[in-house]
Image 1: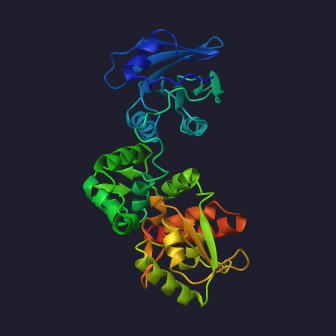
Image 2 (image 1 turned 120 degrees about the horizontal axis):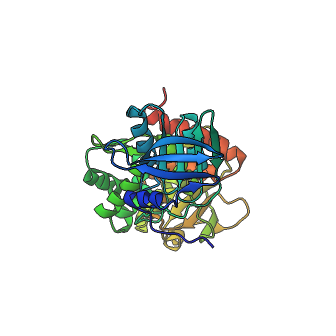
Length: 363
């Protein structure tokens, strides 16, 4: 069983170096200097009778931003003659170790992973040890559930002047707030989610708040998306073509005072070219009230309307209105397609292109 510990401060890392607790067997590290203003420490690495001296940049948090800052600081400062650069952090992923090696920078963590290269003398590369210092976040996962709407809003509007402006945009784009009296997202939730987005190098807050990496944001949302399963649903056979069904659902949803929005899979044709089964699936927080206002037979044989009961707010976020009917956002459509089969995932690439073009990322 792994024992997870609170991430150490940078001073704690220096103290571990002094006590000889930072190592990468058979390589050993010995601190020789901590007084240089430019560096956190100077260490000597020894392996197989060979030695090399390194200047060290320590970071207390193992976040993408912390890693990027450490690398940039080592690259932007002139090194003393004969001395090599090294990063020490609580945890380094294998991809980060590979990046360090490609840039000629050594790196060691406190979990037993590292790459230390002294050209012509020794090379040590070790990975696979688990992270014992997971980064603390007051929100367990900002890419799931309601907090994911903070990330999603940047895929609709990539720049904001303030945190308050983001909060207003998130709440304005949440259909359940205006149509179902859900509690608005608070400023503290937005701030906590933004902190993680910044640490993950997805947004930048140096001048306003702007989206840096839409591809990475989409990937994070996709990797953490959980398809809603086992939801109550009713399948109906109603009279009329697709346009008639849309008008009927819009009218009866209004009469039942309940919001209705097409699922992402039923919204594909708005953002991509794909032929799907002839059934209109919609999310609704109270399907019984809507069912009671619709004439039609409940059936699993050739239904053309499916009512799915859920009040998960991200499913109703940034919906696209056309003639009074609400369609899923391109982000929700992309996520549902990526959770599907190979054909769905291929179509998702079209939706991704649509999204990136709308942000001005692609010509």
